[in-house]
Structures are given as structure tokens and as C-alpha cells.
Image 1 (cartoon, one colour):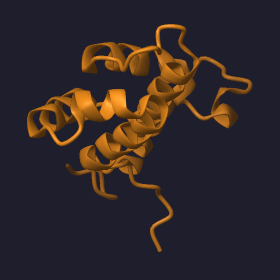
Image 2 (cartoon, rainbow, N blue to C red):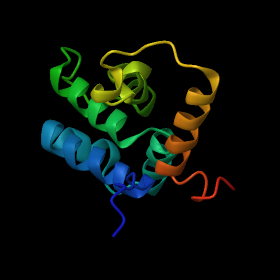
Image 3 (cartoon, rainbow, N blue to C red):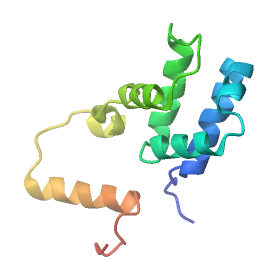
Image 4 (cartoon, rainbow, N blue to C red):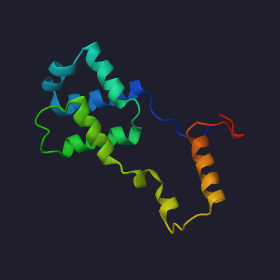
Length: 127
């Protein structure tokens, strides 16, 4: 069984945002973005390269923002999503505890393992 959790697809991330924004903004969201295929395409292009964690963080930023009287534009949401997760936060906590400067071979082994976890290479190191 594959124990690596797969990242949400772009369609799933768009669905996450649309569901959350509909719940937060109700009719304002539906009127602005509702069944508009162009809007879906725009949101898909904005969310496509974001991680699921960043998208969730963006949704949380919208919930907490004083600017949330109106639905965010795709660009505003993207900025909030990117700001919600710092690169340091992406490293699991258990790997941050007691971090010491690593030798180059240790860094390379860690990078290889991360690439495997994210499906960027096969188990043998090839792409």
C-alpha cells in the first residue's frame, strides 16, 4: 500500500476554494464566480502550482482577514495563500528539531527522498 499522501489535483483545489468561499460569502461569491467557466479557468491557473497546504492557508487567511467583506480576487487569494506558509513551515517539525548543518551528501540524500515522496523520481533515482 502506498503510504505517501498524494497532493490534491488542481480541480480539487479549485473545489476546496469554491466551497469555502461559497460558505463564507454566500450569494456574493455565487454571483461573482458561480457557473462562470472563465472564472473557473482563472482560479485553476492561479491555484495550480500552489500546495494543498497553501490553499488551505489562503482560505484561513480569508476567514481571518478584516478585508473579507467581499470575495478576494484570484490574485489576492494567491498572495494570501503564498503568505500563509513560509518555506520553513513546509519541512515537517520532526525534521526541524535539532537541525545541524548537514554535509553535502546528507543534503543530497534528503533532497532525493523528498523528490521520491513527491513523485518527481522513481525509487531508483531516475526521472
